[in-house]
Length: 145
Image 1 (cartoon, rainbow, N blue to C red):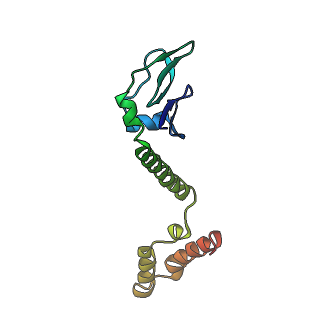
Image 2 (cartoon, one colour):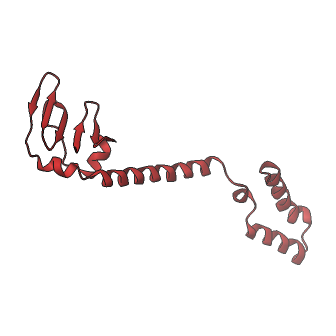
């Protein structure tokens, strides 16, 4: 039997699958418990609203509840999208904290300018290509293949 449950710890359970209330509200933003209620149980045969001291019967049939029972695919998709977004953000944090070898190498423009100044303009290697080569060697040492 299809069952919708809102637990006191704000977990939404639909047919045994659990979702955070926050996620559920992304899919069903109009949902809320009636004032004073801490949880709810709904299926096609019963609709029970719980307070901290008692329970009362809810609307039956409950039109919104019938719709909520069909939302599992949407909730799974939303959860997947949130997880993908978190992974994407984490991948940027990792990249920021650990620069790659390629990111640390001198830019191609720097290499070309150093060679031009040395070979075409005749400037000393110590002022041109040796400076760039030292940077390259430091990167190779710090970030070995």
